[in-house]
Image (cartoon, rainbow over all chains, first blue to last red; front, side, top):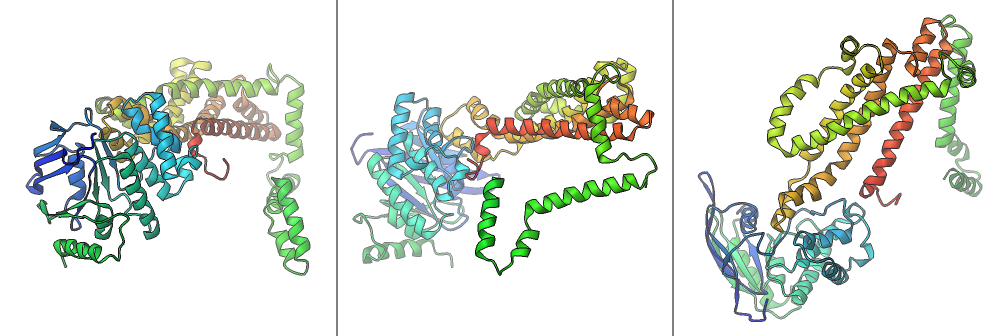
Length: 250
Length: 281
């Protein structure tokens, strides 16, 4: 982990994905520093999900490298966590068991697993429904379970695919703050994909703007704003406007 | 539950005296249940008493008396309990035997495409055949003893058991596997942590269907040839023209089928607690 802010955690070189003749990802290059929260925004249908699936190694890349700490990324060797768009709780496990589940797959000893589970559930306010089953909690709770599960493994890289896209505005604000506080406390490296520009500017330290297909990184914007950020801050609005101009397709 | 709802009803009636009291009474669900059942038995009784079907329909209380008599005397070597047990035993053995093999085979087919490629064509060949079509051939093969009855029941229950456990795995959302893949989990993790638990409800649905098929097959087998069992009672009732015995047998078999399906439901609740909703936690 380390506190060295300039240390590069993730390096992606020329990441390319083709389905037959269709090039979806075209030589994507970028770096993420240790403990950085980077947002990725792009026009609808630019292949954001393909991008994440390739990064997470769920899908083989056609070309290019993904390096974590200088080594070729591998789910077996590295801790990669993924929060999907849809809630992906295991219905037959209680909330608590769902949060602990990622650590179970990773083979973390039981004692530590329990401690971390308790800590994270406390942080996100899931303690009160620890013994309920997912079908007994609300949709936002389920997404919080998935987020907690992802953070709990202390991932080298945490990928989030529009995790709050399905939720209403009020809950989203709340969960974005929760995400930021989790990230600050646990110092994870996070890559957050969204189509919501405001959300990106609100949570991220840096924003990568993707182009239309074939997708590449079109621009990179550093968001150097104090936290907690305000939507009405002129600087905030300026950055939001800048990103909007970059991806406008209308 | 009944007590509390009656109490609530009382409060409701006394508070809204001049309102829709009569309407509330005649639309009370339990009242309607009772009315429905009483009407049914009344119609049955009248139809029997007026001899609409000649002397071939027994009145309800005659059927009840007949069943009671059978518990007291030996009929064809055993009393009522013996007949019920003879049938239940056949269903249990046939059903257990079939589900013991069909459920794992279905799971295996869904998880392994080679196994699927080998078993599926044969299975598809036999699938549309009504299980009762096996009755005659099984008597030719195995005679009229216990084995041929169990054989028919097994054949009948095998199909829905296998089909449901197969589909139970096939219909799992792929995202659940992705969660494990991303975390670096093995194929074993996927099967043990996702495939098996996710297929449980479908397996139980299959067991329920199988069980009802099992009772149908049992009846078919016992009607063809048996020396005891509830199907035998029905058959004997028909041969000796005792409508009370036929109806009694029908009621018993329905009762047993209902009880056994209740048992499966209880097992499911025990094994899949996560299917319970918050209401009846």
